[in-house]
Length: 211
Image 1 (cartoon, one colour):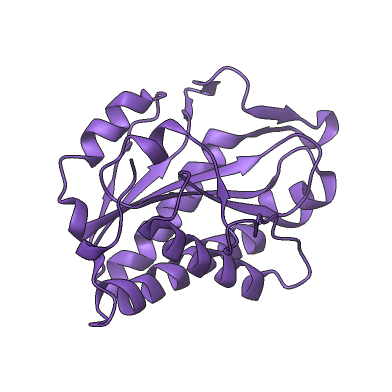
Image 2 (image 1 turned 180 degrees about the horizontal axis):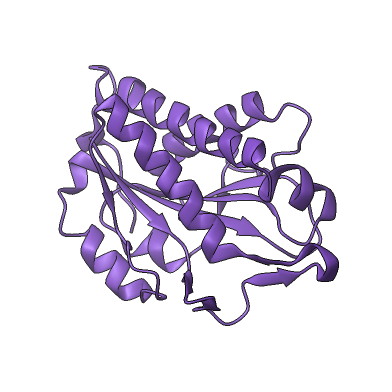
């Protein structure tokens, strides 16, 4: 199993943010840049996966904003039956908590989303996981480009709200909060490795892939 890690949006180059928007200015508390956060989380995941000897690829190691088409093309170079795509983000819009997204329909991505959602709830028992159980599982479904154009199973995690001051201070901008986010992703990856990719009664090749 290869984990294809996508740190959404661009980062900071010489102090200049590479993505229009995708930031929130807290004035006296500074500017929160989503792309910087996404890279910090992915780098923390990479550190733990390296120690655990779990194969991974950083799909967008550059600090500029790599086009979605390029991210997907890089991912699709890997065998669909041996990889899954994990896109890391944080939210905005006045809400709170986390979300796990997949493409529409019942796919193998739904199994992954359930694992990631369960690990989120274990790591943050007092925080909401924003869910949609209308199709029987917790993931939200959208036709995001990286979820529908990748050949392999793919999920996108939204990790709290940058415009929620409590979440910004307690989680998103703190070392402890970021570490908890990293840890729950790694625990979910380990579960996916054991429960989906290595269990004989769940055969990945028999499950529907993303459209």
